[in-house]
Length: 357
Image (cartoon, rainbow, N blue to C red; front, side, top):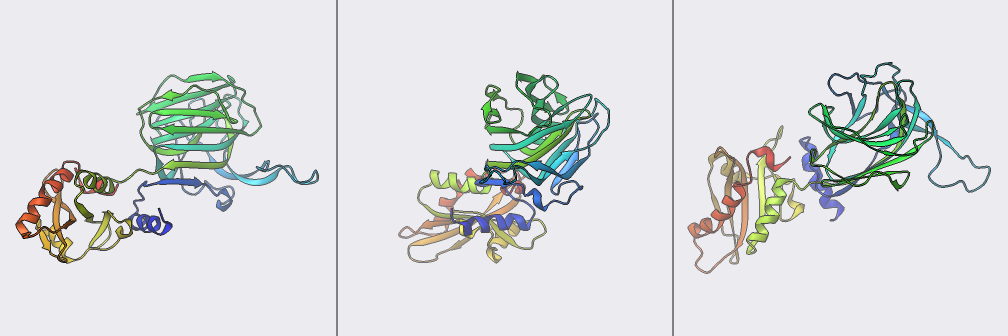
């Protein structure tokens, strides 16, 4: 997909604060932009209910470069910004979690380096992923106390039994942890090696990513990268599916009103270049008056604009259909052709927010 189309598609949702997941994407956190000794920007600190939070900061630490030095005299380590949990509370009922709140993820591959730097009661740290809150998530942790790599899930604040496999967890050294989620399958690598057998769980379909420690554990996190598949918003899925079911359709556009924006905008279209474009009086009237509109653009095509209703029967969007014009085509006949299509679409839409979230 051309970059221009992607930018236009994302621009619409950036304007309203809703950035849907649409295509393959990569997130590499640039820790170099974070302020030293402050909580990392874009993150939220929390803990499961009944547990104590932590103290998360951006720090400097020695990290070996990804590529080996060219000469023996070259530096083998460099100072880089890292994310650290530095709180020293001696409390076993402590589960500091740091969630990246700027994006949610479904299918993903998350990689980061972890170094456990301290802890008397515990020495455990790892990832959380598909987290909808600090009470609902999957987690993978490096357990230096038991020398295990462990999987734990939380559902509404209730924790499942840890699934652990023996592994060499090195205190005071960087280790690379990778988690891959593909639908219900979860795979884990430690320093590039598969340690835990493939896990299957359907408790959490999507959510935020982040980091956590246990008890009085101190730990650092660096080189954070996530690749993931963006979800297709319902508006675009409806268009795709309707075109497959009704191959004679030449084009579809879905217009709706957006939060904090005046007028209507294209939130789904056969041509992604159209997404983000403003609608006109016709689309506004179709939504506001629950009316239908007809246009004979030329001798070969016609357009029909129809209201799309929510589960309560209220119009929430205007759908413009472009169709091939038949000989003797009348306005009523055009509406009849479009009626089963709009009915199929309405069966899958409960509310206006469904179209853009």
